[in-house]
Length: 120
Image (cartoon, rainbow, N blue to C red; front, side):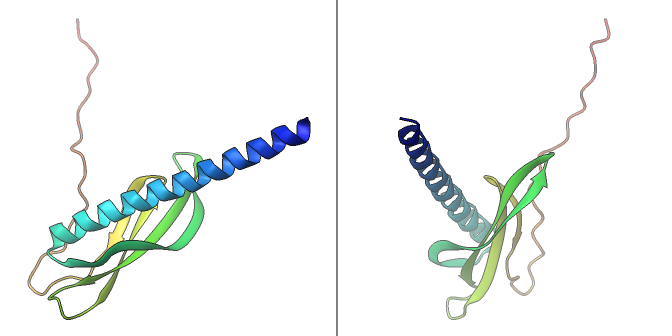
């Protein structure tokens, strides 16, 4: 009886891990397309591949940090490598080749908001 429960839990954990990997890859592909569009380069093959997987501490908790690689073209006749790092399901860093004459892209950051206590 206990062996059956352990087997079922192991299968459920494996399915959950597989679904998490697929979701992270899907989000990395989406982020890669968006970054390429903003940089004015063409993403080749329309896919990403996992290059590195490590565990790092983010917000005090252990988190998988995945590096996905992909290829881009500046003018349609060349290939350059790019990559993006995702901590969990959040885009953390990226690297793309620059076109001549274009400024470097800055990461999009949410504006800071000042929060004050109610003064009644």
